[in-house]
Amino acid sequence: MVAISSLFLAAAAAVVAVAAPGELPGMHKRQTLTSSQTGTHNGYYFSFWTDGAGNVRYTNEAGGQYSASWSGNGNWVGGKGWNPGSARTINYTAQYNPNGNSYLAVYGWTRNPLIEYYVVENFGTYDPSTGAQRLGSVTTDGSTYNVYKTRRTNQPSIEGTSSFDQFWSVRVNKRSGGSVNMQAHFDAWAQSGLRLGTHDYQIVATEGYFSSGSSTVNVGGSTGGGNTGGGDNGGGNTGGGNTGGGNCSAKWGQCGGQGWQGPSCCQSGSTCQASNQWYSQCL
Ligand SMILES: *[C@@H]1O[C@H](CO)[C@@H](O)[C@H](O)[C@H]1NC(C)=O
Ligand SMILES: *[C@@H]1O[C@H](CO)[C@@H](O)[C@H](O)[C@H]1NC(C)=O
Image (cartoon, rainbow, N blue to C red; front, top):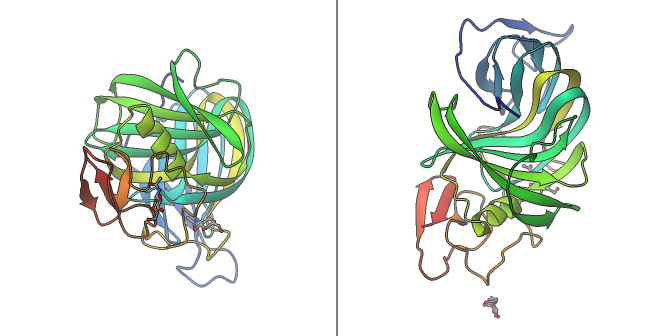
């Protein structure tokens, strides 16, 4: 896709908050957006970005749900999730109906280095790996995902216009619901030499590019519902995690952070360093 991006020109955000009949003020208010905005809604971080060129209505629904409908010759991406991102296992269901070029993906950013990443679960008419070099693969959550890296030059980012890499896992057996073990993808990327930085946000995103469609996505846990305030819950990453190399995390892998249940040691040649409360990495 040509203009995969997330730009925060939070220009004059048009916010329409509608309380359903019988709802208490402030509880589960629907929030429909037609211009770019980020924030939290019902305990989930959300990000909605549009280049303003097409028609898109993005609505924060109750809990971890959002819906969107779009058309026209523009680019947009939005969804709900967490800030910061982590190696959590993400559960979601979706009714995803794209006509044309579109993705359904776990989507996020890191800083230092600045990386935009996608775990593509489903897509419309355009395969995002088209023309990209395959660096590896990982089999997790019921399918193989192929790993790619692409380069963006002077493009919009969470740090303004910049040049940065995009990391990709693209699911072979496309689907619109399930669990996504982010640890497995982060490990696969590390094994392909793709190094993430400090996590910024992480959402289950829908993206549209010169296309139309509709999408309703429910992000959250099959267990315990939404966690608030960005806190990971302790239940993630059970034995299925791909650890690839003994009991200690490989260089660039995660080795700590709140909720982390994986290794707290690093393979030789690297040491465990805290990036923040949520994430420590073997560097
Ligand atoms: C997703 O579901 C699994 C299994 O129920 C659970 O361990 C995990 O914590 C859930 N993920 C989130 C982010 O709630
Ligand atoms: C992992 O640790 C266990 C117990 O400490 C040990 O028995 C096992 O050999 C270790 N596995 C690897 C691959 O190092």
